[in-house]
Amino acid sequence: MSDTATTPSTVTFDQFGLHADILKAIAEQGYTTPTPIQAKAIPVVLDGRDVMGAAQTGTGKTAGFSLPIIQRLLPLANTSASPARHPVRALILTPTRELADQVAANVQSYAKHTALRSAVVFGGVDMNPQSAELRRGVEILIATPGRLLDHVQQKTANLGQVQMLVLDEADRMLDMGFLPDLQRILNLLPSERQTLLFSATFSPEIKKLASTYLRNPQTIEVARSNSTATNVTQIVFEVAEGDKTGAVVQLIRERSLKQVIVFCNSKIGASRLARQLERDGVVATAIHGDRTQSERMQALDAFKRGEIEALVATDVAARGLDIAELPAVINFDLPFNAEDYVHRIGRTGRAGASGDALSLFSPNERKQLADIEKLIKRPLDVQRLAVDTPVRHHHDERGSRRDRDDRGSRRRTTGAHERPSHGAHHRQQPIDDFFLKPYEPSPSAVSASAKREEAPAAPQKPASKQPLAALLGGFGMPRKTTSSN
Ligand code: AMP
Image 1 (cartoon, protein in one colour):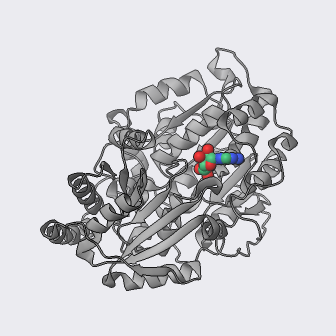
Image 2 (cartoon, rainbow, N blue to C red):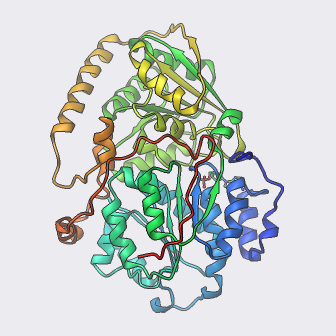
Image 3 (cartoon, rainbow, N blue to C red):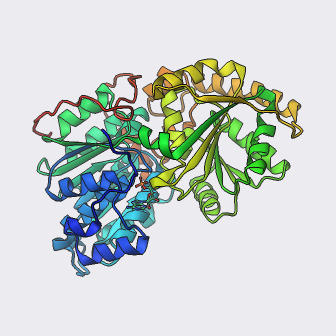
């Protein structure tokens, strides 16, 4: 694995034989050269092969699968008003609403000069407009698993003609407890189809999923961590826990950061930090599970428009966010799960740009730091940071206590809608409850959901702690020829 995820390749988009309408859209996006994952994946997908892709968000993988999907569906594109002429032919499943929304925006822009229709469905918002769009007919459907099953139940989505399936961020889907939903969906699809699975990590569970549902997949890898080494400058600042808020303000001011994502380990911590930053004159907002879907979308849009300097996020809330040319990310807390560190710093240095990953490290986070260094197989540059911004100790202390209470109570309570998240339990890691629920059914979907909840769930194994072999020097993926379903 010598190339990096985003180093421009010598291949050009013209060489793939893509239709002029697609090439036009690519040019309008400003893409001049395919990224390595695109150079590798596009020909394989155009060939009709199944793909097992080791690539994270930020490598250009969305175009890597979307462009050839659009090309393959073009012969079926038509302008008929009849819904029957627009069955769902490509299904793209993602773990989070934000990622679904972003993938859908990309697909729409790549297909905008074609007659192919696309739509996105995810939970937490009214089902009716989605149902109306599905009834009109769409060829490319982007969905989160729970809401898709609601539409299937309500007969607004029919998956009987799906020819191409994408499982995007498959590792995160399993981490979030989606395996039973995925299995239900996979069983609704024709067995004669092309399946593309993308994952940043390859645990035994992912390999099992692939060997069960993919046919003789072509393995495609790009080295995210190598590109991280060249594109992203990683610095760890040692500060006292109580100085962290001041440190964030100082880093933003000293480095003139206009747009930064600040990661916190808990949603309560994210809210508190956003409030404190605002008080210190940084335009900030938090995205996490206590905010509604539309609030989070608004916050993200405002951030993308440059109206917000600091977007304070929890890991799951930030998963899949695509913000072009983000100059820096700050880790307010070091994540409990070292893999999240790799995901977090992947928010910067995207598509070949350079970026800074700045982490605050307090003495009680030694274990997290050691885990990260073990995972990325190199020591991090630790510097002392003298914080001169006044800090509100009383807030921090009260917040820390509240955080502990919040974590404790979250472990004890299991809401009616909560899905199992073995990853979360395994790691004892605070994760927004909101995102552990695949969806929040709208009133019209409640009865459908209730029925599904009663269905026996397939057994799940705890999430694997296997290191990011795919990211950090390759993995020995057995090629398995197995009939699907
Ligand atoms: P993704 O990994 O698909 O989320 O893409 C990450 C970012 O890279 C998105 O902002 C894309 O618009 C951008 N991107 C994708 N392909 C290319 C390309 N060939 N050249 C430049 N930017 C790209």
